[in-house]
Image 1 (tube, chains in turn yellow, purple):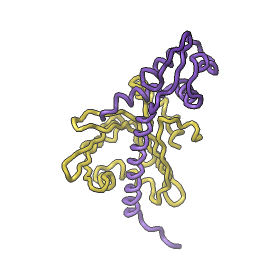
Image 2 (tube, chains in turn yellow, green):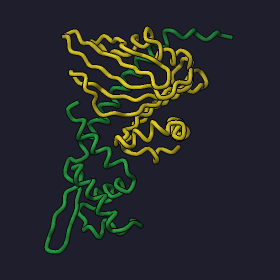
Image 3 (cartoon, helix red, strand yellow):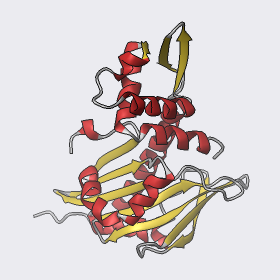
Image 4 (cartoon, chains in turn green, blue):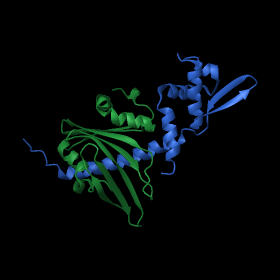
Length: 149
Length: 114
């Protein structure tokens, strides 16, 4: 897909990583691996839930040394090891209320010397759009992989 | 996040391609009459009016009435919450992928030299 089709409500990051897709996929989907890279400096990451079945919940918490916490959570949509991940995403506030809900897809494509990783975060704008999307997920899959590819 | 309801309505308004085109047109032109806004679009006047109402409720545009003419323009800083959300998320993922790459490198066997 061309960049011009990426509208201003979509974030797209792409990079070549000199590691195979299998290692990267495990780092995203296995709790013990996930916490090794998720936390920024000064934070400690913990995994509260990580159920990679479609519809399964994930939730992770970042704890700072001053005691403040910041959680993110969502639901897995598609899990296809070691190539493709799709999940919903929202930051939570201190009371656990989920903020603006978005959808993330991550493609792990084999490339010479490693993996071409493409991450797309899409701000689904309305509850109706999200519901439609959840219901019609398989119909949206081709479009999403084009976005991610 | 405290800004979530505002973001939701902004993103809802911008999710529609016609409304995005209207906002882009207004960003380029400054202020336009409602008739001039509608001119390039092959949709009915009432449909344009509905789109403008959605954009106004989201705080993206404001209207001004001068005698019988109605004008619309993009509100100053209307897109700031979207841009700020976008740049925060971009920073978050860029830093996270840097860490992912470093941890993955430590787990990746060195290539055999042939």
